[in-house]
Image (tube, rainbow, N blue to C red):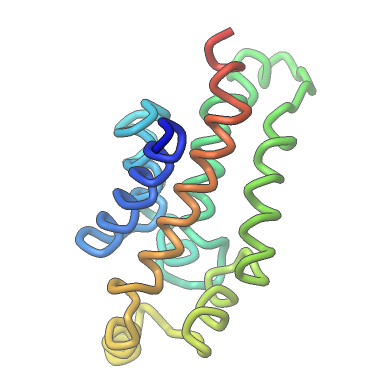
Length: 171
């Protein structure tokens, strides 16, 4: 097995495992990438926690796993603070973040958590409602559904990072 495949498989498996055991989809994606590819840092992982479940478990916002992948890409090629303050417009980040976004939307037909639920469960859930959350778990959320979403996003992000961004990071 080649090194690239081993790495992306490891990233998938870690994100899947963390989603199953720990939850917080953006944290799971970022933790897997941090531990395997040294992308990001513990402060970034902490900062994305409120973005789980489509933002504050609302399911109304962007899927937290996708956010995790986008944040990882941004941590490599996003606009630096000083460039931001100076108004520099070079935005390489969109070239690579759009690759992940397009792959995600192609797979799930929506970047929004509710849309992902509709695709993978056949219905949506109110994660802030105790009874609906119980149904969410019974439907396999942290067995094979959201776990797979987090794993796939982490894997796709790792592929973009390995294939395109590590050479930029190391320049």
